[in-house]
Image (cartoon, rainbow, N blue to C red; front, side, top):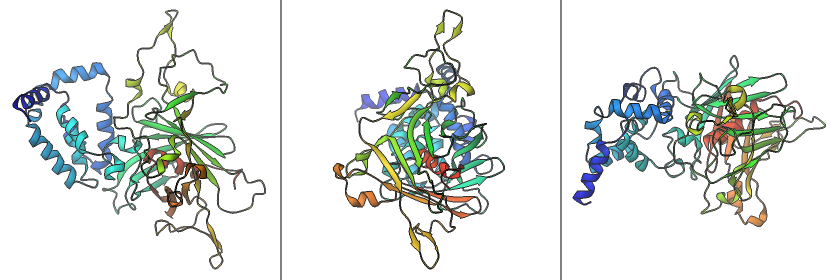
Length: 428
C-alpha cells in the first residue's frame, strides 16, 4: 500500500462517524444477566437512528473517537481478525459486535472480516438472522414456549443451559389473539412486539381454519419484486405512493393438508418460499443473501406527502401496519417448495417415526422434517432433494429443538415452526 493511500485512509478514519459509547461498552460487552442476550437491541437501535440524530451524534462524539479511529489500517485489520477467529461462539462472540460499535472505521473493517452465515456458519449481527444458513451443517437452536404470555423464544444452542446465562436469544414471537383469528408477531427482543418498533422483524398470519399461513417480512428480500395484492380489504386506505415501503412483504406460504375424515396421523404440510428460487439448492446455486443492516420503519419511510394540504396520505401506526398491502414476493424463477418428510409406521412402538438423529426425544404431532420438493425437469440431484432443510421437534415440556440449514434463514425457519403451535381444527 502506498504512503498516499495510508494517509488518505487515516484521514477518513479520523473523520469517521460513530462513538465508543457507554452502551457499547456495557450492553455489548456483557452488561446485565446474560449479557449476550442484549447485543441485538443496542446495535439495532443505534444503526437505525434517523439521519438528523446521527448528525448530532457525529458532532458530539467526533473528538472522543479520535484515538480509536486513528489506528493504522493494518493493525486494526489484524486486531479484528484475531478477535473474530478466537471468539467463535456466544457469549464470547459479543466482543466482535463490540468492535463494530466503536466507530465507522472499525465497523467497516469488521464487516469485511465477518463473512456471511452461509460461508462461516457463525451468527454475529442481526442481519445474520435474514441470511441463509450454512450448506454443510445445520444451525442448531431451541425454542422455549411460555404458555402464560403466549410467547415463543428462539435461542442459539443445542439445548437450554442450566441457568440460562449462555443462552443467546435470537428471535422472539408472541401470539396475538383476535376475535376471528390469531397472528404471531416476531421481534428481536422479548419485551417489545409493537409493529411500529425498530425491533419488528416480521409476522405470521393464518386463515380462519388454520390450514394456511402467510409469512410477512418487515423488509423486501434482495433482488425480489413485490407483486401487487388485488384482494379487497375491509379497511379503507388512502392512496399511497408505490415506492413507499409498508413493512409487510409476503415471502412464504405454509399450507396444511385438510383432513376431511379426521383420521389420526402426522400432519402434512407444504411451504412455498416465494423469495427463494428452487435452483438455489443445486451445486453452484445461490440464495438471496442480504448483507446490509435491517432497516427500521423510521429509516424506510420518507417524508409523507399531504393530500390537499390537510393530512398525510397514510399514518403509520400499529393498526395501519397490520394490513398487508403487498402480494407475494417474486424472484422471476420457480420458487422453492418444501414438504414434510413422510414418517414410517413402527409396528413395535405403534407410532409414526422419523430419524431426528437424537435431537427429538418426545413424540408429538408438532414434530416434522422438511425436504425440497422440486420438479424433475429442473434436473436437481436426488441427494439434494433428500437433505433435511428444517427439522423441529419436542424434547421436554415447552422445549423444542429447531435445526435449519441452507437455503432457509433463521427468521424463515422460526416462522415455519410457529405454525405448529397454532390451533388447526380442520387438520386434526
